[in-house]
Image (cartoon, rainbow, N blue to C red):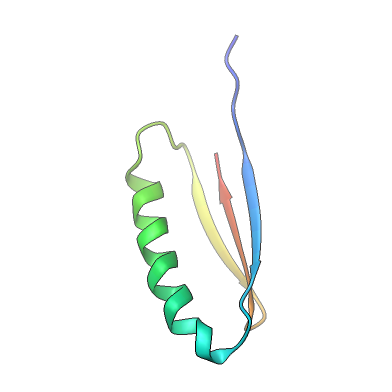
Amino acid sequence: MTFMLISVTCLHVRGLWALPFFTMHAVRSATQSRQAKGVLYFSTDREGLFTYWTLSA
């Protein structure tokens, strides 16, 4: 039997001052997730200026 783990996360950035730090870490995380063995799909999305979503399977 094969199982698949699907993860959906939402992050609310606290303010404009935090966006550069968030962006730096988000780009690193997205790159690592896309290159990881076993990850079938990875996606990011923005909802407004301070809300960000990730989806990985």
